Image (cartoon, rainbow, N blue to C red; front, side):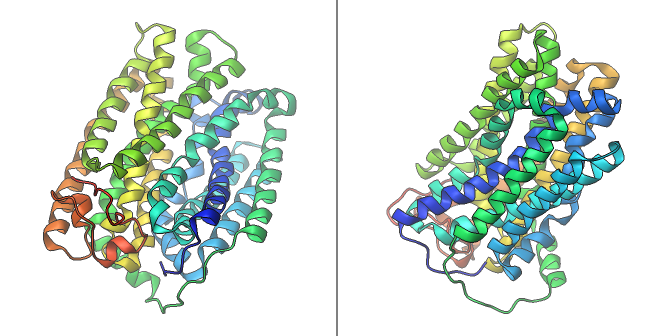
Length: 437
């Protein structure tokens, strides 16, 4: 990621919100699938296990192509990649609206997923380009809220689904995406960046593959996303069945729960700025996810408690993405590989988006919803492995002092040094408390 001069704070926030908007309309494409799941099942005659791939197919390309796309961002430009991603999602949604069968519809979801990956890898680079150092932590925490904000908005739009049908809803999303692509292309101005020569992508991917940092962040994101989408990939349908309410009412309750994740994002940004230890935030988050995920699917739990557990689950889940985005420049093997490291992290996210709904749908279809609680508990237990690796690697980087954030992950509270923390500009501000392990 090539550096440039960030905008003044007064003009940076409008640009940050414009970038956030691109993420929000992209998250619509994630949220529209669980919202329309029942309608698609009824029209196309799909089983729950098959319909779950409406969520999972979206992540298919991203599960294998995150790192190459992360490297491509630096070579073709973050803004070009973001606009191309929006256009790809628009094309996929438009084609999905006229899909004649499940195979074609799932194919269009793959196209949407490729565009989504390009946008969410490019967007943090654009945030860093426009945000000066003194607001960068808050800007990145705000960016991390794009998923819950987008999913909340699209679930609140549930009444439109009855009015437009799911095909009309897909068409509406295509129009929104095309419009936002034009808005971003015409109005977002990024500071000029250096034009460095890059080694071949294959060489950079090899360097990233041999380094532990990208794998650790990718593992964390995979565990998080698998557990999150195992629950929220079916939440409207599940709440409708569990509470005996209509899909619109269930979608509104789901939106309220998912909105709590955005509050978790913002809270995590504040905690990190105040010196909270990232590894403790990760451990607390996954512990709460295990407890609330198990309770949400437990048969004896009353309906009101199920909704409350989903809200707490969502809030706790909001901590994980912020820690990962915060850590990307710190865990990248070199400053030049921050893009690849972000790509690895998002690749893990897409692995989770691929596996979570598919596994949850298959388990629910075979054994009933209560069995999904075991899946979420197992995922959170396995998350202990990347959390431990995160701590160990952070200590080692602090001890080496090479490109590593001594203040962010060492025991002392001091400003980090080294190019690694400057690559995304997430090093602590002078005079601000560092994050400790």
